[in-house]
Image (cartoon, rainbow over all chains, first blue to last red; front, side, top):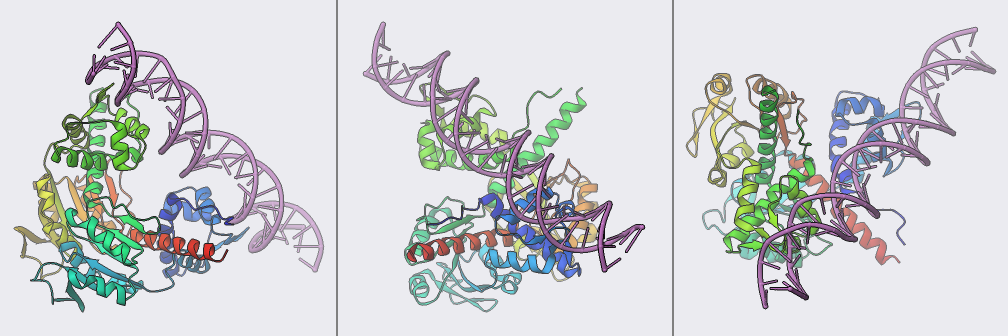
Length: 219
Length: 219
DNA sequence: ATATATTGTTAAAAAATAATTAAAAATATA
DNA sequence: TATATTTTTAATTATTTTTTAACAATATAT
């Protein structure tokens, strides 16, 4: 029987932000912080910070606050960042290549072990030491190497099929940059990065502000 | 007096997804669809679809459903996609370049007009016809050309200062790929794409599933 | 005409966020 | 050193927001 209730996505999505702020504090040699101070910095309520953290345990102390280093490391553990993850990039186009070249990932323990593409001009190439293979070789690679996450940066039309294949070969995480929704078994996690959608919401909000301003002027 | 209540972000975030699905239907020559059918396809409740759409007006018809083309175009208008937007890229690194090379943007009316960087090796170069300028030239450029959105793909350390400058020169939208939170005036919209955060939440969820599975086996 | 389908809208339920309270710990004061 | 005061958490309660469900009104189709 599982007594722990599931943590909501809203909370999980805030964890990396806490982690980042705590990392910054740590770098500034700040050893302790109260939820109130942190709330000012992060622009959320102190109450929410405490509520969020208490989903995972009582990390603070009355009258003292939170020990920055301790809390930082606890969140690190909660997020599972205390080990290395192997990722593959599927689709060696612009974004795929950019991610391979993004050196910060490796510092955090995210290691890209291979890139797969169909383009003969890319196959055989090496991007920052990472080899680009023919997609034909993907099954073999996934079955012989631990692959925690597949980064999907391929065209809409191919993404679903490839994701299905990868899932059937045991890949449990899809970081999906392709502009489609993937239907996966429930033990496979999909995290979408829909850049176009993100830009569209930005544009909506810009226009909204503009309209408000116009209507205010019209008064 | 503004009688319209503000639309929540949750709703706005779903709009691009509706837009995409309707576009797909349109391409498949489907002329009408009910909220129920759409709910099956999109994996959300029909009720939510109707509720979402009715924030903006009654686009459907009882007993009939929604006319796909009409609704598609209405959402297009709501999102403000019926005009062209000028964007600049600030930070010509991996991701910045990838976005310039992403040809789909232009098809949608998102035109990248310039790239700015500090790296002398990049300055003067041209990426898919878009020139890379010295950041020194940015103020002049922004003041002489309409810039709707700045795409921020620069290091953490510089992002805040640059964003402040851009805002003071009149840029109303920041598409922020830099791994910091930007404090902007309220008429400037920031849309964050925090890739590292996104990957971290993915990893959390993968571990969560793994833990569940282990605890189930242990029973 | 009548039965069916399906919306827009209102109501209810659920979830998320914010505020409050009580206990504990740290600090200040006598 | 002992005691009072302040700080601050954890837990509880309240509020707000979001989502889902129910249903009356209306158009379509037969």
